[in-house]
Length: 153
Image (cartoon, rainbow, N blue to C red; front, side):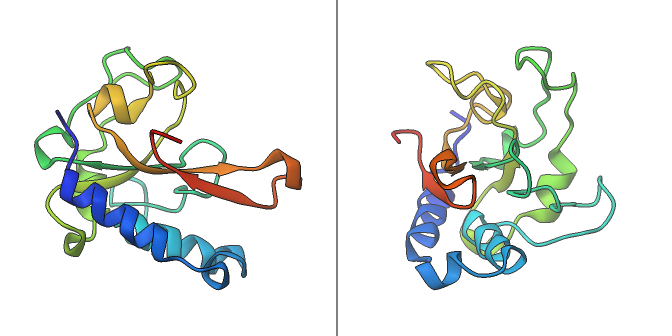
């Protein structure tokens, strides 16, 4: 009920348009393409002002989540294990989301709990939203390569 479907589909189209050239250069540049595909700006200000410096830049914040504006201010009330209570991201989402991707907002949500069926992570529980795609690092390549997958894999 919280998914911004037009935005999610547009993020998937953007991700599918990325070429090997886009995704195999310097990580700083590759990450900018991933942010663009997710509908996020590259913001390095202080947290609380749309900071996206952590997005797709660690092992955890790798879900490109597209949610309706109405749910972007939802809080975690303890339902997502390992995520702080509150987890107030509404202002961050509003500041960091590119509006040309469609209605709603985007965020790089925490994947903690995504391994369960159904997923019990920030996207699916706090925002009641499906993911547009997820960045998954590949162990077979010594974590030097990745794939982008959606909820169906």
